[in-house]
Amino acid sequence: MARKIIRFFKNLFNLQNRQLKRIVAIDKDFLPYMNTLGNFVPILPFDGDENDTELLKLLEYLEGLLRSFKVTPNVPAINNQLLGFQAFLEAQKLWTN
Figure 1 (cartoon, rainbow, N blue to C red):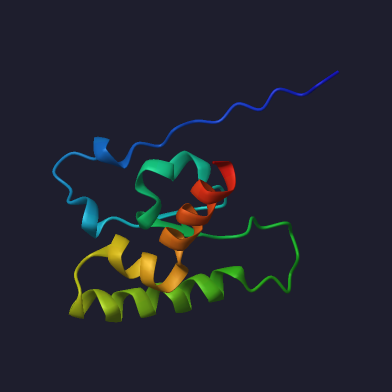
Figure 2: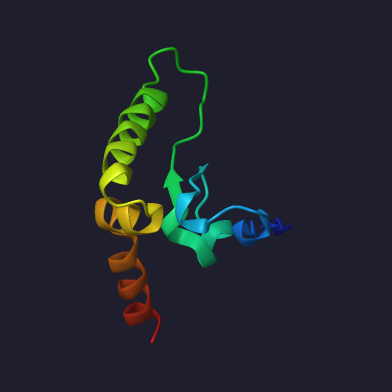
């Protein structure tokens, strides 16, 4: 029997009185953030490994994001530069057409 996968759309535009350029979304799945991918920071899920360093990597990234934000106060612009999501999206368009 095939397993049905249900995905939820996480709309950051619904966060009232917040500027989208100041919002960071941290999650293991990027698909719910496709409309605001520039705000997304990926993280691997915790699987119980005591040697897991994912949160330390996240902390290091967020510290760098904060330093960059002081110069360019725009999370999507910084993330697109550091994580290359825009290039990923362009490659996806080429692949699917």
